[in-house]
Length: 293
Image 1 (cartoon, helix red, strand yellow):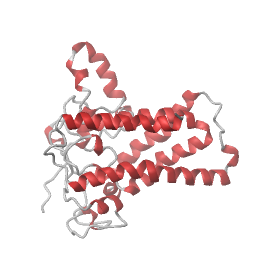
Image 2 (cartoon, rainbow, N blue to C red):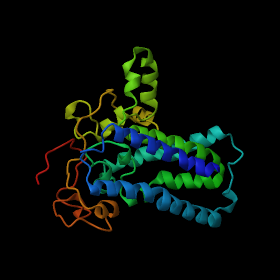
Image 3 (cartoon, rainbow, N blue to C red):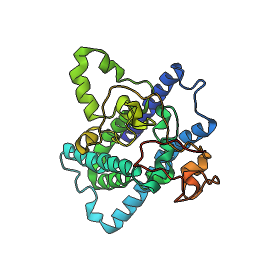
């Protein structure tokens, strides 16, 4: 079994296990997901690792090979800890800012919107984003450059760990409840919830409105590391879970509109995805307001 295969297998197994646990817990029975939602989730799950990421790596390696051939494996002899630090900064930190900007910019929000319109959390929510959201994500491009420059082995160790943490943060299993249950684990819980994303902190990001005292839709942006939120002042930790999820404009366009916007746009003029700019665009400065259908 090659390291490349193992690196892809680990998050795949984690998703399968979490999906089964969620199913046994009743998540997919009489839930709020439609066939359209499942289609978005399954297509997103396939396109990112099969087309988008390999495509970016192909372009980067091709261009780097032509423009900067001496850079190939340039850092291969550096200590692997430096490799991990570079990946945390150029992949995870840039993804934090990419994610944060997508909640502050009305156009960027439209590419990230599929991730938030679903009204229930679960492991399948993890990869819900428009194709362009991932295709333009700086972290993937930077990671490809770092791999070209000799950090490929560290990447094969880093990426499954990151993906498993992100899958766990979206999972309806709410594994972190165990940490909050026993007083003896309080110091461990305090550290973990400030270092990595957990269901409690990430569910808060998906909550509909901060009016419930738990949700934090304009914060808790961290992917692997939650400490970015702590450092940049966007963290909210309550050890509770919102009961209502979603986004202000809940019009659920067909899967191909949500995933292929702005190439394909909604025919509904009330929809944010009707055009690059509409009268119903999400306003990131407003936590929540009723949407008039």
